[in-house]
Structures are given as C-alpha cells and as structure tokens.
Image (cartoon, rainbow, N blue to C red; front, top):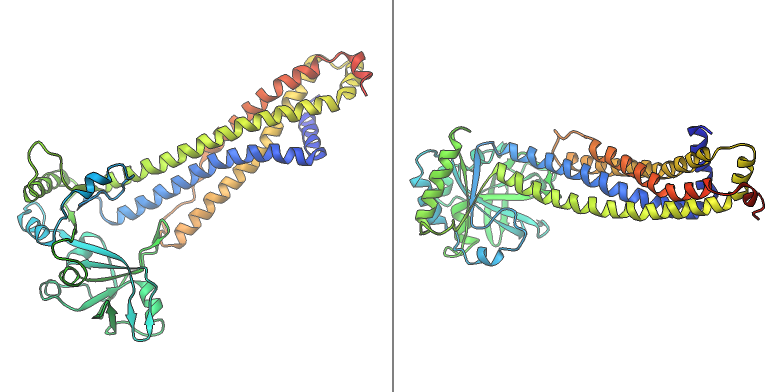
Length: 415
C-alpha cells in the first residue's frame, strides 16, 4: 500500500467518525494555534514597538521616578522614592554640559476637555511640556506652531491638541484659535499634532499639550509632582558619556549616597525594548507550554481514535493478511494514518494562527504603524508540523503494532 492510499484511508476514518474526530483534531489545532499565533503576534508587537522607539531617536533616554515597565514586585521600593520635582528637573537641566536637548514633561490621564457645548470622554491625556519636548521626542506639528520658551516662562495659555480631540470637538472647523476648557481653565488652540495612531491598543492622538509651568501650577501640587526628564545626546557615540553625566548629576540632586543604588530610573530605548521583549517572551513561553500540553493530550486522543479504528477494521485486516499482505505493510499503513491525522489538525492550527497574526498586524498598521511587515512565524510553523508528525507517529505505534499482530484466522472470524 502506498502513502497516498494510507492518507486517503486516514481521511475516510476521520469523516466516518465526525464527532470523535472533531474533538481529537480540535485538541491538535488548539495546541498548534497557541504556538503559531503567540510567536507571530509577539513578533509583530516587538516590531511595532521597535518602530515607535525608533521615532524617538536612537540616542535618547528617559529619567523618571519609577520604571516604564514594571511587573509589580518592587512597588514598595518605588513608592518610597521622592518625586522628581519640577524645580529639581530645572536644576538638572542647568547642570548638564554634554547636551542641551533636555525636555521636562508630566502627564495627567483621564481628563474631560470641553469646547463650547462639546466635550470629550474622560479619557484624554493632559501633558505638560516645554519648548524642547517636540525636538527631543520627535513630535511633529501638522498645523499651527509648537510652544516657545516664552510660553513656558510666562505661563502661556496655549494648547496643542491631537487628532482625536480635533475630531471630537472641532469636526468641521479649523481648531486654531478656538478655546478649550480644562478644569475651569481656558486655553487657546495654537497647534495640532501630527497624527500618530495607536500603540498597543492606546491612541497617541487623544491628548492635549499645555506648557509644563501651567501644568504644574494648576494640575498638580508643586510639592508632590514627579516629572519625567527626556534627554537626547548629540550623537550615538556621545550617548554613554551623556548617560553617565546625567546619572551623576541626578544622584547629587537627589542626595543619593555613594553606596546606595539610584533612587530614580533611567531607561534608554534599548532598555525599554529589552524589557518589553522579555514580557512578550514570557507570554509566548506560556503560550508554547500550553500548546505543547494540548498536543500531548491530543496524542492520547489520536491513539484512542486509532485503537477504535483497529477494532472496527479487524475483519478488513484479516482479509488483507489472507490475501498476502505483509505485517510490515499493515504496520506502515497505521503509522501513516496516525501521522496524517496529526497533520490534519496541524494544518488547521497553522492556518488559524497565521490568520490571527494577520489580523493583529492589520489592526496595528491601521492604528498608525505603517512600516509594519507581515512576517509568517516560520520557525513556529515548522516546529508545530514536526511536533505533530512525531506525536502522530508515537501515538500510532501501539495501534499499528496491535493491527499488524492480529492473527488472520481470528481476525476473519471477528464480528
């Protein structure tokens, strides 16, 4: 019997017992789907984050009170840290000598922005920034102007809004020169940000920028505010020295003893990317583990399915042996059937996993990350197909041995 005929008989066995086959193949498909989809989706997310971090520049870093990505196990240590105050950040900027590209900012989420009778949902991010924010963080202005040094020093009442705010409050008019109300304070729209889209499900256009001096005055308590300090080195080669100087100055300003660790966080783009990569790798590893467990369970299902098939085809096996079929032919037939059943489920799982990856890629690209390629997770696909081949082979060994060992006379008498 050739391989094609064995695969055909395996498919006939699947169709003959639909309910039993569905549950067996579903277990295989779920395991393969978990492996392929997790690999594809984490790859897409890492690429998307890398694209977003690249926009910030390769030689930038961020100083803040707590880490940008935290798994929660050190929250008590971070809670004890004193805030990085606005005056402290100004002193830090004055003392830096290796770069003057230093921006101070702070964010207050969940605000309602009003304009006349219109108002937004309570999900707008209000961000206090200085005049260098746009240069250091690669934030572009599509219309109007960015803030100037005078806006910050003189507590200007200008505001720069994102595209989501334009759509909600000024759908059919030019927003420049219009008035916004934020917690009883009025601001005049002086600029509109370039559309950025979303990142990891969060819109980057649902925000309003105001001068950091006004933000600190009206939207935080002076003695309780912790600002973020973004620093950009003049070149990639100058980055290590700039980081060292920044750490030394910040430790001095925050009275950190020589034997103490930093009481602030300094994150480079590479560090943020590595932290996020570790998170996605942990998620992918969990998905792979779950997928492998599902495949092992599926192997038991394939073995049970084939044992039932051997029992149902006992007379057929007896007839074939009586007509001269060798034991090795029977063994080969059932081994190929076991592999084929595993591959049927694997193909379905691969298709579903690739579709899930494609959907996530489309969603992220539609949110603004245009330079995002669709890459198939080839390693996961090949690994899944090979795993299902091994599982089908191992699961079919005992049923195949049992079928090949049947006595032809007893098999022909089987009812």
